[in-house]
Length: 186
Image (cartoon, rainbow, N blue to C red; front, side):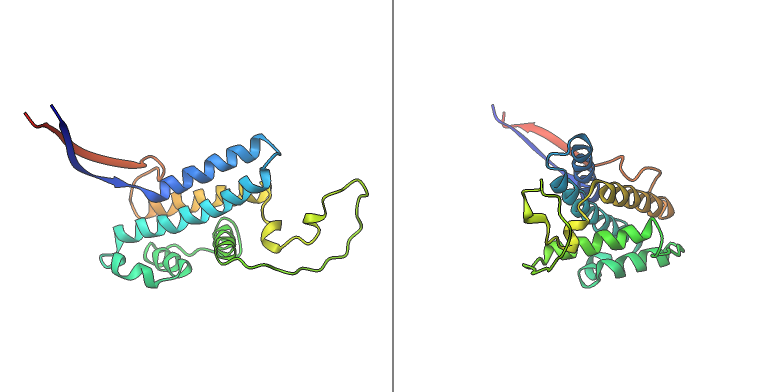
């Protein structure tokens, strides 16, 4: 006897991106080994979570969002949603400046190029790895402190927008839902 399942489900993508950022942050906090790379993951997945949330909330409050969202920049999506919700964010202060930082970081990484950077600095003779002497601007953001700030601020912005859009009280409560039926071929 063979059984078949059929149904449908909803995947809340922004929640999975947030969970990935949170996992990377936990790893970055627990060990210095690989902390640079875990911080990078936090920054990228925090930006992914924010944009995915904008698409999630936008589809909930605007009828034509699915048709229009591909033509809107991340910044325009945020502007459109906050305006609709009567929120006046100050992008020069936390938490909203962190959204801009995360989006800028994400774009820099997504459209990365080889850079030639010049430097002149006093060095510790015990440092044997000169790889970080010509650090790029994006590399300087891959710190535990920056990762913690951006993750916390994006989480705060998402929660605020979620509540303002009257979508519930906890934006990170649901990751997916489904309904299905099981039938057998008897």
